[in-house]
Image (cartoon, rainbow, N blue to C red; front, top):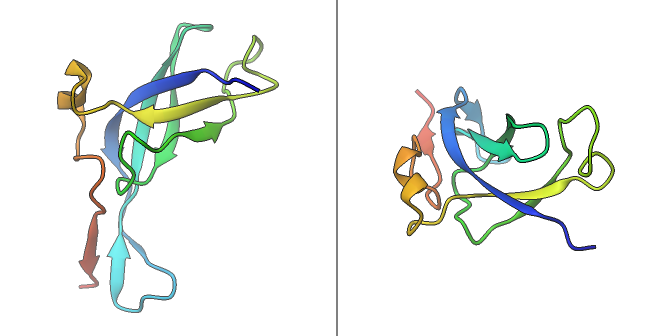
Length: 101
């Protein structure tokens, strides 16, 4: 199946959480905002900031109906060469980790 790819912007960081199996370390994930051409709204999905634009993941559509409801679509972040990439709240491709305080 050939799924459409929607690129988006990392718009928000989630709270720090413990990293399973790595005592004393925490990480943060981000929220990815992608524009849906069907319902003309933004859809929001979780994203690991360690993943760059070469990573494409399957997601379930948030539309109430339409062509993506059954199959979903692929999402990724904007590439560094895309003008929209300047809006990311953090640079994709770099994990956000810290020692637990």
